[in-house]
Amino acid sequence: MPDVIRVENLRRTYRMGDVEVNALRGLEFAIPEGQMVAIMGPSGSGKSTLLNLLGCLDRPSAGRYFLGGEEVGRKSDDALADVRNRRIGFVFQNYNLLPQLTALENVELPLVYRGFGRAQRHKRAEDALAAVGLSDRRHHRPLELSGGQQQRVGVARALAGEPDVILADEPTGNLDSQSGEDVLRLFAQLHGSGRTIVIVTHDEEVALHTERIIHLRDGQVTSDEPVPESRRRSLGEVQGL
Image (cartoon, rainbow, N blue to C red; front, side, top):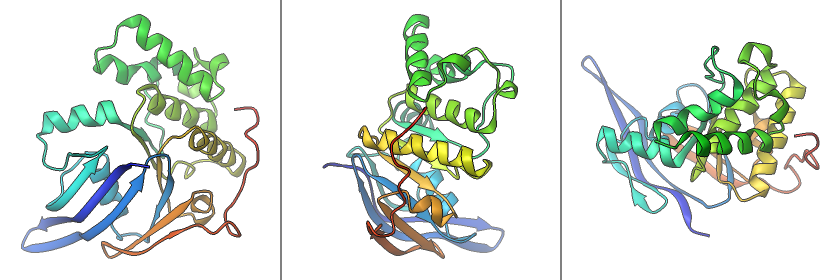
């Protein structure tokens, strides 16, 4: 399978006054199409910095970042914004839904920025909400939804743009155990349909639902291993999603 993500000698350095902070120190890895990967590490390991780079929210100080075979790490701000909107779907720990909009309107919003016509974006949003099992909640606002339902709206929003990759930042962090399992079932379903998914998490139980775990420490990859079948968590068949 072709690589969706590839990074070569990826580095990110920040200046804090007279102090130079090396947040990422020469990362090297690739993620092929259709793989579900967890990125783990303690606080300060570089997870958030890496997520910002993979999501085209920031640029590397050195090294190269390829998304779908195209080097994107050196693009202009406008070009990076276009890549984010067209090719990356984000799922956030805090959902990032606009409270005044319905679920359907929240899912449609990124498509407005991409210039889709009303009918086309409405159809895409309807289909995405159906894919996460929320067609009957499409006219509800976020405060009328449970935390798990809000996160599923967030997943639908990521799906509607048909991205190359879904980046999920602690997607179960604000959910109770049952809602967290529901979201992980949904990711399992999406992965089974061929989606490329990268989950940043501190929770090993979440990471064990993926195929592969990349561990970071002090801005470096300390291990990059497949999850053995004997340890991999299975949620069984997707039910009611």
